[in-house]
Length: 375
Image 1 (cartoon, rainbow, N blue to C red):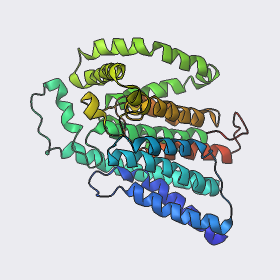
Image 2: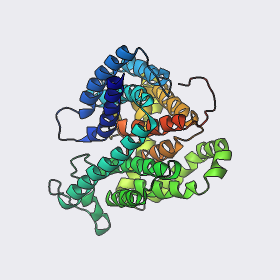
Image 3: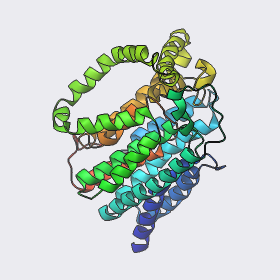
């Protein structure tokens, strides 16, 4: 049994660490695929040895998503990189959900601290490389106000630093959770990660971080009126999009393109057939249908997996949100907001942060809204 627990402890640490390194664009094989495969094999052998398995979050949700995506995408000729990114992220969720639920609280807290440390080092190296070595891209026709775009490209992680900003926003609020809920001293990390967010020159990442920090000071009020707040956001969304479109046209082309994507997505859906509307056009195929990448979490799943896929993934996130009294909202809300500017198919980093919080909440005895399993 001691060997069994030691193996699980090591796997939990390794998987948490490698959840962020799956983004390196210069590797022939995504490390995420290798880590999930090896860890699943070791976890399966440990489970056979102990004859027990434990989940903090019901596996029904990711299993339903996996079944739907595999069954529907096989007929849509998706881009294999995008397809495997979605599938292996969900497999990652299942494996880490089981392993981290089994290890002790102390091991999980230390793993989280190691994850934040190595992620900070990793993205610090990314920022240095991107800011000082951007020679591969030639920028022509940029006005002086747009010269900062020179520092947003040519990264060994992503081509565009907006995607780095998504990871850093998740990292920032995971570190904030460690400070506020676990009582750990994380001030230096918070400042360093915020500086890295600034160095992405991603306006979405910077504004979402500041906005969520502002909301955190009124967290009690928003929690008591959470559904009113959500409904107000949904109702006001069309007005916000329209006003944003008018403003963006007077600022720069990059910001304007984000609203243009919403416009052409709506136009495409109005003229698409029922099959494409319900089941999508296939992961990674947005650019072939609307002429531009999705760049938006909601648009990506709506276009590429259809109305059915979008509703399933949103319902999955909704249930993750309410499992432990909205505790994972510190990750989910910033992620959904910042991913309206840049999003990706492979999001193990997001799943790792969410699961760390949910599992720690369970180990600390925080109550759920319900004692029954949720998707």
